[in-house]
Each structure stands twice: as structure tokens, then as C-alpha cells.
Amino acid sequence: MSQIIFILISFGIAFIVTALLGILLIPALHRLKFGQNILTDIGPKWHAKKQGTPTMGGIMFIIGIVAATAATLLIGKLTKTPMFSKVTFFGNQERVKLWAGILLAFCLALVGFADDYIKVVKKRNLGLTEIQKTVPQALVIFAYLASLWLSKAHSMVIPFYGGVGLDSVGGAIFFFAFGACVIYGAVNAVNFTDGIDGLCGSVTVPVGVAFAVMAYLHQNMSVSILGAALAGGCAGYLIWNHYPAKVMMGDTGSMFLGGLVVALAYTLDCPLILLPLGIVYVVEAMSDVIQILSIKLRHKKVFLMAPIHHHFEMKGWSEKKIVAVFTCASVIGCALGVLAFYFG
Image (cartoon, rainbow, N blue to C red):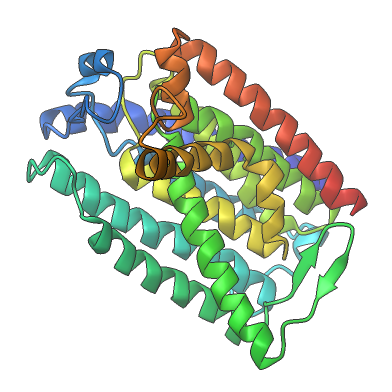
């Protein structure tokens, strides 16, 4: 079978598993009363109608993505397909990057799960405090970067410039400092994007496709399969999360997606590619930062409400229109990212 067939298999398994899990998980979340608590002081007042919508739905695509990746790699090995002859589940640098990335995303999802659990079960509206979130995130990020460094998977490519050597002491300091900022920023940027029905999942589908294409162009089969699984899992999740949403991913899902997106960039040795691919995430996060700084320094708002998708809501845009426009922006950013990665 060709590489494209395996990529499609990965997408299909993730899509089907995630979509089918909704049939079981959503009623279970209802029975457990794991409903979203809507805070109208940090979002439009009309979001109050979403009160009680089940959260932690990210569990659906977490299972779907991991299952699809493992199953597709296993199918390739069992069918003795030539392109999988050198693929092993563990033991070399490429596998370390792949599974360390999945583990990063999973551990960040656990932090998100703790936050969701406290909100819906312990009835603490704001969940974990910033310190309680940041400390475990920092530990997980450091462990991930350390695994890359120890396996000598610390090279970095800058599009249109080339590879950058980071073997020196200064290189090590840069690798860890830069990586910590990029991963922490990306994870929380994806979290900001999860603010209206279908938005985060919709803008992430083209991101997964872009990673699958870039890895395919560089003959990195396992990463291409993981990227396809990311796209398929998000697409399957949208069956239940499109407006009006029957389930929300919660911090469990958004932190997993953030971790996986940034891990995919690191598996291709090009974290800077997140700028075009994650253009929506970047704009969402920056709008929040700009709003906070403007209020503190100028005592004025730049946006009617931040993150920026709420600004457009306040301007009268429907949730469907915002999702459509932002998804188009994500597609354009991903296309530019793929071109930059290929030609650069």
C-alpha cells in the first residue's frame, strides 16, 4: 500500500473512533453531571444558555488520535509494507520524538482534566489557580525537552535559513528557554481558541492536515500518520461540537491539542512553523495579551471583549460565521506554512 493510503487509514480510524465515542461518552457525562459552568464575566452574556453542556469531551479525540496512530503503525508492520521496514515503536530518535510528543500532550491533558474536574465537581468556578496550572505544565515541558536533548533530537531548522546547531552550552540554554516559551505559549494559545462552539476543532483540522503533508514530503511516515490522526480526531469531534454544541472539549482537550500541535512541530525540527500554521492560535493569544496590557497601562480596551473571537461576537457575528472565517484563515496560514517548509 502507498503512503497516502496509510495516511488516509490513520485519518479514518481517528475520525470513526472519536465520532463513535461520542455516543457513549456524552450520555455518561450527562449522568455524571459533568456540565460546563459558564462564566458570563469572561464571555458574552448570551453564552449562559450553554450552561450544563457536558465538558471534558476532549477525551473522545485523545483516545481516537492515540488509537489511530498506534493501529496504523501496527498495520504497516504486520503487512510488512516496505516503507515500515525501518519503523520501530521505540528505540531510535524518530520514535523518541513521536512518543515523547504524544506523552507531552497526554500529560498536559491530565493538567487540563484536573482543572475541569475542580470546576464541574468541586464547583470552583475558576478551577486551578495560575500557579497550580503553571507548575505542572512547566515540569512536563522540561521533561519533554530533556528527553529530546538526551536523545540528541535538539536540532532546529529555520525556513529559508537552514539548520542551527545547538550542541554548545549556550545552545542548550537557548534550546530549553526557547522551547519552554514556545510550548507554554502554544498550549495556552490553543486553550484561548476554545471559546465558541466548533472553533478550536475546526481551525485544528487544517493544522493536522498540514503536518501530515509536510511529514509526507520529507518521508517521515510516523509523523505524517500522527498529523492525519490529529485532523481525523478533530473532524470526528466536530460531529458533536459544531453549533449548537452537544459537548465541549474542556481544558482536557484543548491542552492535549496544544501539546500535540507543538510536539508535531518539534518532530519536524521546526517549531517556528507554528507561526503560520497556528496563525489563529497566535492571534487569539495576542489579542488577550494586548487587551490586558492596554487596560493596565491605558485604562482602555482595544477589543470589545478578548480573546478576539468574543470581540466579533460582540460586533454581532454569529458563532457559525466566526468559525467559518477563522477556519479559512487557518487554511491560508497552513498553506503558507507548507510552502515555506517545502521551499525553505
